Image (cartoon, rainbow, N blue to C red; front, side):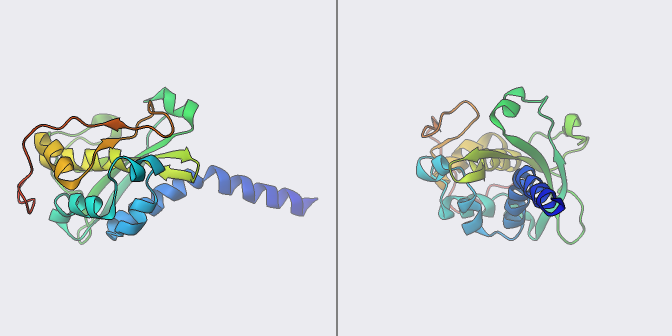
Length: 200
């Protein structure tokens, strides 16, 4: 009986920690610029409809976090379901990640808005994104389009749409999109200069 209880406990722990493990796997993949893993962890609709490919992810990482190589996550915090109550209904989980310099371990002191975000305990300009994990037919997956949008905006500000367009991102998945659907982007006519040399 004790063995059954132990096995059940281990299984329960494994299940309830699945979103956290997927988040950590994703963050580690970003740190290592493991593009293949990043794409594999994307919501299926993002890979099928939204343009989340190895090339698009590589392009965006290169002109965002790539400006501060070597980089790593220096702080990770869980976002309460109270922020977006719908996430609790859907079984979605969200964390915020502050990105920093791998050598010093200090946050990258830059964000296009030029401010912090007190709800996350960020009171100075720091480069951060959210990582949202949701259940899919493939198991828990990361909403990669959200991550790419926030990263692009954090570094390039109002030019983020041009960057996403240049990279080939066609739309996004949100808590309001149904399985098999996505929210398409309406892009401006301006384009990001080839080479992504725009400086923060």
